[in-house]
Image (cartoon, rainbow, N blue to C red):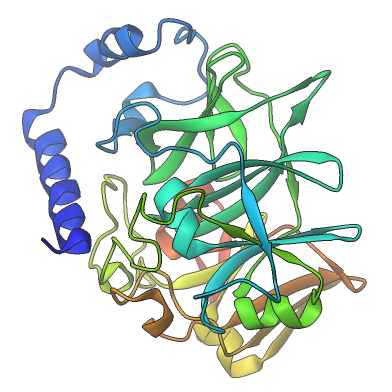
Length: 331
């Protein structure tokens, strides 16, 4: 059986089920209580009706809690153009290949002495790294199996509060309203990471046979007419699956960046160059379309940003502005 096609079909069936059966929204928290007895659903910053099941149960997509790494010089099987989510803190440089992240979505790690959570949501193409310290405690994260605006909803194992990956805010539970600090990271090609961090380390699977690492379970997702399990309004002035670079309430389309090469916006410098394959295009990730490498800096230092889809930007920043080839676009 083709793994990618079967997973795609299963998710589509789940979406049809959610939209067709339409259980009473008021019943949803009671259903969740059985699986999440420690979560305080009376405390929420969003409408609970916006949260839907993505199919897998709690921890059905397993986080990596004891990550293993190989030297950038010795890692095997990773093509130069394959995408990695990279983090450099001090002298500690690490790359988390999307060929692994796409199957796990969350890695709990410690980099340069800083406890971090490295996250990737394939449905929104959002790679975000958080400092997982909050007040006097360190949180560990897992997957809820739930989505909001097609984006990963995480949970912390200390309080079982639910967190939105896009933005890093707790939306349900004891910690609702609190936010994690986002650390500067890049979605870049392995070759790009290797060039700027020759002494870096690369995440490798704990068990190479656990998943079909290197394959894409979302074949053709880049060309989808509508995002998976997304029930909100789609932007009507740009394709919903167009990649955009976001910094706060401002975003720039990749087609615009391809044309300009470098965009200056206030004190921000946003640059693009070719060489990174999409993780969400072909069955073999290394053969995906070239989406390029994006760098966002201020005064020569990386700035937290996301490379996501237009639908996700407007879903989470409804008052945001998207800069396109034809000028600014608002929702």
